[in-house]
Every structure is written in C-alpha cells, then in structure tokens.
Length: 266
Image (cartoon, rainbow, N blue to C red; front, side):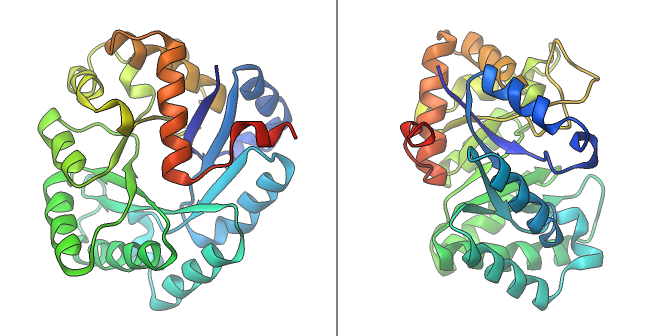
C-alpha cells in the first residue's frame, strides 16, 4: 500500500527540529509522495531545500488568499510564474482561492485568484484551491473563468463543504481532497461529501501541521497521519484501506503528474 499526502506545510518552524524523524515516520506509514503547498512565494527556497533532502517531495508555488491584502502585486504574479517555471518539481500553483471567514476583501482575492489561474493555465499546471465560507462565489467565478478562458485542472483542498457544494466543484472538473476533519464524529456534511465523490476524483491529505485526525486531534499534525484519513474515508466508502490507497494514489499521480512509484527506488 502506498499513499500520497497531497497537502503539507513541513517547512513551518514547528518541524525544524525533527524533520528527519518526521520523514522516517511518513516512510514507515508508506507515504510515497508529498505535495508541499505554498503560502507565499518567499517560501519557495525553503520548500525547495526540503525537496532536495527528500526526493518524494514535490511542491507548488502561489499566494494564499489571506495574504493577498498585504502582499499581492503584479510583481508577485510575475514571481510566481518565474518560480513555477524554474524547477520541474513544481507540480501545481497554490495554494490560492477565497477565504471570507477571516477576510472580506473579496475583490482583491478574486483578482489574485484570477491571475494565478491564468498562470496555471499558461504552464499547464493544476491549482490547489483554498475555499472557506466562499463556495458560492468561488463556483460562480470558476464558471465565468471557464467560459472566458477555458477550464483549469485542480483540487479543492481540505474540503469541508456541503454535498451540494461538493457537486458544484465536481461538475467543474475538480478533484476533492479530504483532511483530518473527515475523522471528526460531528463532521456529518464532510462524511456525506466523502461518500459521494467519484473514485477517480478523490484525494487525501493532512494539511499538516494543522487539523490532526483522530486519534491525534489537538496535536501537531504530520504526513504519516494521512493513513488515518485514508482509513476513515475507506470506512465511509465501504472499501479496504488498500483499495482506497490505490485509488487516491493513482488520482494524485494523475492530477500532479507525479513519477511512477518505482522511480523512487531506482
């Protein structure tokens, strides 16, 4: 069984002292690949350095919607494009998206999202989408962008929407990725969404160091814990964990164009 953790932030300070031990644990948990998301382009060198240490790490570059108000400029857009073009291990643009839970600057967030989608389209890369309290606006915007410019591949990461909202993004062609929140007993809407996503659009992630799954809830999250996410999604879908792992790993390899699993051992 091999798993892919499709969303990590292991460059954060909380991992500085024990990243080698963290890596040993994800390898023991059969995590074959990690996709390292990017909050802002200034992280690029630190993420790149991690990928230099651990060949199973691939990564993205982008600007998080909560950083748009202070940091978004046309120069940042150019920087994202140049960085994404500079390293073949860049497999996505993001994370980008909309967050109306902590910020209300919708026009700025949409402008930054628009330009990052254009970069992804230009480079033929998928987008990693953060969406919090913004599903209706997001879906409407994507429909408009698709009509004007054509579609973009991508994933709704750490998904927490309703089944109706889930269907909006499935209809737009997105993959849906579930995090540790799917293990929470009261997360009934997430459970329903995890049951309805087609098998060829399903992904799993940790979003570490955030949102540790049961039985580690409240502690620092790490990539090895993606196994608990996979186990819970498998239960919800009446599958074995091995079957779920095969499906989600194949999906991750397809979306992010990751190398064959055997490439790591050659």
